[in-house]
Image (cartoon, rainbow, N blue to C red; front, side, top):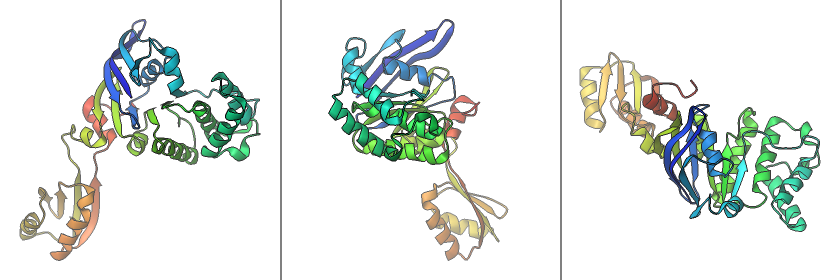
Length: 306
């Protein structure tokens, strides 16, 4: 659906995006994960025709956005990081304004506004002024405005910044519904838990460069440390360790009365079952999971929010 090749953008002496390439499949949620200033928003602005690149190419649905800008604009919806609403108008009036800019007929626009307001859960508040809305409600109307022309691709630039957990979860549900209906979504964030929940594939970006991309599982393979299950046992003998090693097909290391099993959490029931079979009493269990925070730290040497 989207092909980006050797894209770069600088502002005076700052290289915001540095020779990045990636592709996004039709119907997937593709996430850009990186700290503030990493180049996420600049990349999204170039992909959505808001900013012209210095070098490189962007194709949407097979069309070069520089050669077919007007057509590409009809294919995309943009949810900006900033709230783009008129505070002294109602939600319904705001959506009428933005919908008219797309040239949607009056009757069809009313129908789409009603449908979209129901999707985002604000139909009952449609006549209230936007200035009476919470931050999360305003962000949901921001999303609604980008959906009125029924785009094939939705660009979302940090759409959950500064909102409460309930509103964030509602936005997640809207995204999942849109994606289930076939919409391609490009999502930027510096919250790893968001891409872990939402995204089919992820590009980790830092200092304007994509340092890794792929599914969560393929990204985990880049980290030398693997997932493990640690158990603290009441008593542990050398014979017990040998028995565990024979019954479990994983590497096991022991230290005093603790063992570490090189396995993911899905195998925990089997590990517990084997311990019970050997009459080993478990005092404590710890799961050492490899998440995107650990991957980012391994690849860059710094925390995601540094």
